[in-house]
Image (tube, rainbow, N blue to C red):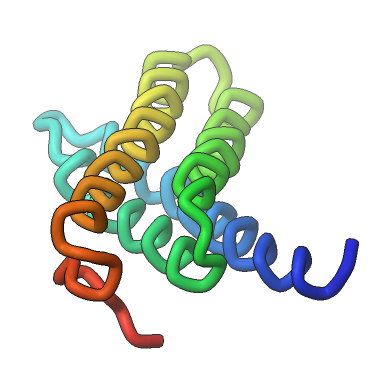
Length: 124
């Protein structure tokens, strides 16, 4: 791979892994709480990771790729935790759905208001 390809894909991998590790550790613990608060806490974290990956790589596919990486890491909880698959498979599916929905929202905002006027620009 040349340097520009590596420069574009490194943020996607980095932020996908960061989101996946946060989901695997904190997301699992939040799913053990009797009332369902995991989505309210983990979705903004995931969106922030996807947005950072997008801003660094400047590719819309970064939403999907970072979501797939995070879901794969989340699925590794099955190996550690055992047969509690509902606490692992369902969140992994929702991670992928979050990535798709986030891609649609950001793309729609960019189409409506322009790339620099979406209101979600992050200067890093």
